Length: 583
Ligand code: SF4
Image (cartoon, rainbow, N blue to C red):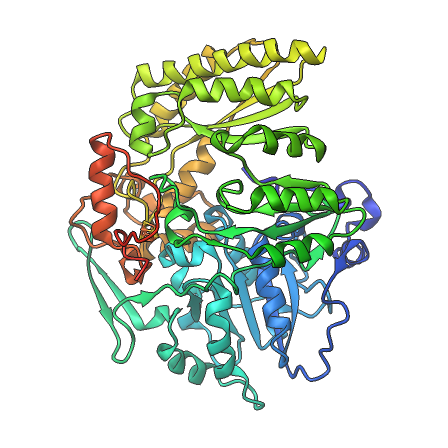
């Protein structure tokens, strides 16, 4: 679960409990590469809102990228706003302390389903009606983008006037042309004319009809004249996809790290991973662009290499070498055991990295095939030894449980793998004369839209609790091992929204207004939570079918069948056309 209070100085110094004082500290802490940007000709006011706290927002490269692009438009100046502890006096922006409702445009950046409730908190504090249909021309144009906006927009779609389906670099240029009129922006003119822009979704023009006898089933999507039958995702080519932090601060979750995007998309095809499908195809940033960003990394900063498979890129060794040779230590967002050759490990060590984070998912060979993430347990164990012998003494391993068709043997395999890794970890540590810390984190599997496992159910909470206890008991009192079981309730809420529909919006709003849980809100509306987390029929119309991600439903279904038959699928390759993304 997110720590909403992360790095908030108000927690440490009561003098800064006032939001203005807190924002002064944040601004003073920032190294802002846009500080000298001339905004003299900017005649429209925009604000980027992140529905979580400052520290979380500032570690989000997508949020910073959109903020940069809007400010570079020339005709808009863009401020930032966040979730606040005290909402009693409304929501103000960081830079100009203007109230949100006084902007021409409000852009929400959506990255986590569990932040949806914060969208309502923010709108409520500004006395802005929640739903687009209830706001007249006196309210700003309210839009949303970000990974959650284009994965499955439906649980929050009725809130927004427009949603961006795809990557900002690709959609913004056409959209900015539409809105740059010098007159006061005509909200309705913009909404209506946006239908012609690829990558823009106007939720008010789509009517979702549910089965009156079984409201969890979507019968039909009615579309207003002139609006696309499906909204196509838009993505950039390799040269435009590159980004790095325009602002760094010690108060970010990634304190003083200059995030540098070294690739977008992932070629591996892990069947549980939504990002792996909706950011296809894999695009690597050019080595010149990455090296330039490394050179711009400040003295008290680190270069943070960001990507879905950070070490998959063909240039990663050269990039790490350049960073070290230019005197900048680096960090990696994640690593894969099969990318850790001796040369890479030496550079990771040289950079002073003390802990590496690796997703293993399961110790069961059977379930690994189902997930299409096949790393042999032998390789994992050997790699742990190699890492520790290099003097990297912290290893964090990520696992899932509650996976489809998971049985006791599968969980035993995972527990056994952790124990064997720990044994190797301790044995290899002896050479260092110091034993570090091995951490095993377990999260419930959440089926996500646009993955081959999207049709599977989220495990029943009672069974999940039993499974969590079984794993925790199996690894109890092991020296040098920390075991974290992530919040089951948070995963349940995430699962409710991840494959939600406009019924989820009703439940979200009701729950907020009545200060009650999502579960109770659903019950009050005559609905059952298990209707939202159930196994879905492969022939059903899905709320997120309104989006055309490029990846075809036919391909996802083929991959789903292969998963059930425990057949793996090779990663993307030159000349491949199988999923529909590459023309
Ligand atoms: S068509 Fe093939 S190479 Fe292209 S993104 Fe899909 S799986 Fe990868």
